[in-house]
Image (cartoon, rainbow, N blue to C red; front, side):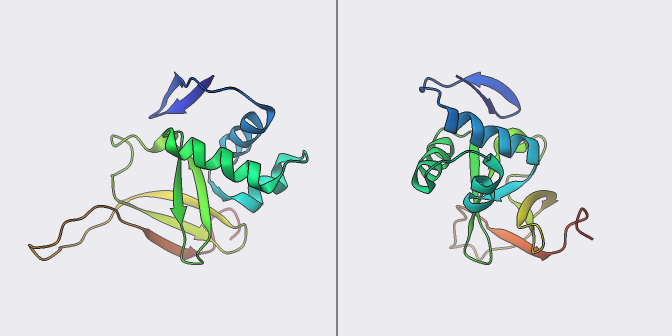
Length: 135
């Protein structure tokens, strides 16, 4: 099965299913991160919620998707097409639209200074408002 990974189409050795294809298609054509509920709504075929979460989690493990936990506590998922460090900074902001419930990566690096005894592992910066499509 071919997948997007770091801006390249690569082969992942997993069984291909209609659900997997549908989830990837929805995320690919949206161009933004989406919640499980939004993905389920856009798929247009009857798929169990647990199955969609299982597919999303597996794609995160494989590096095909990345997970964003927003300020509202919801998980959002996005294709890792733009996760290449040459296109987006490793630690960047995300913007969540309250209207259309999508999240997009912003190419703005997060700048901060930590005291010397702290070690950074992850950053989760989510800005909330209305996106340019909904404005």
